[in-house]
Image (cartoon, rainbow, N blue to C red):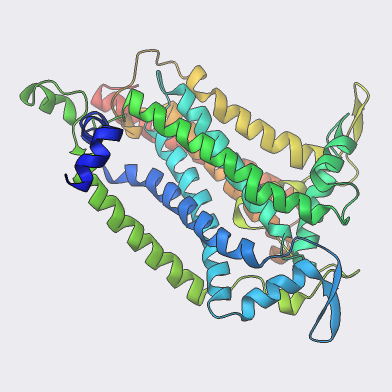
Length: 416
């Protein structure tokens, strides 16, 4: 009796292969964006396990090269001087950046091809939750080196959470274990970063994949003509095993090559230079995925505050709570506001969707302009002027895109 037969008698591997491994995967290259996010998460978990064995989530003072510094800071410095320690920490960092970028780009592909339509609204909402959770995961990891840079960056989020109307004090104490910084903040963030958030990501990714297996991918409209010739199959592509499996493995190895290359030549924030937390505040800006929020905060007048139903609304509330909340709410409502009500099984052509495509382009330009606003001090632009630039650029992008696509769709006789 072979080993395969022994396992097959107990696990029914042949039935599993017949049911799942022969399922079709589309050959369109944009579908690899989802795999890019998944593979980045796998790399994050693998490197995170290594770092978790060496990191000490504590702010107690320990001796490091003759100086007394927090244990969390000292453990990261020791990781950096280990053989391959710094390179693995960099791989962990850049994998997080790639995962957020891949999820965001994947959502953009879904939006512009209208793949969020019925019956895929639930997966669209799960994708938005994945994006938000991945950003929170990166944010909680920001504090763990416990350097002057990371503490200053995290303090911005502390004051934003404290500005939440009615429940700000409770939210800030829950997330930051009291006043920030406190002895419990680093252990709290460490628990969220290595346990709570990864478990949430695994659950969301699993649910996302289960729904895809049930509903199947969308596919190019060119496949519609091929279906009749191939027996009317709903999805045209290649089997998951072995064809797609080999492609995915090759893609993952290439991704590892790119990440290692980035980790080799692109350094992180030098914690040895910034040093442990001190009363001084370094000039810093958040990573790119939080820059729109940071830039929007810079555009709000500092004296803008009022009371609404007993809750105090401050600039931090508007820029750090209301602004990102409205962005995610608007994105979540897209499948329900789109006028197309029929089930969508094919990729729509963005050139034939003037209103929705121009809306997406305008929103993208607005978010990019708010990210640029994070550098108004370097660009020597006043907040009022930057606000005017952002509004004009958004309206221009929306108007030009809509006009051109409207003419194109009328010429082609299509408008979906």
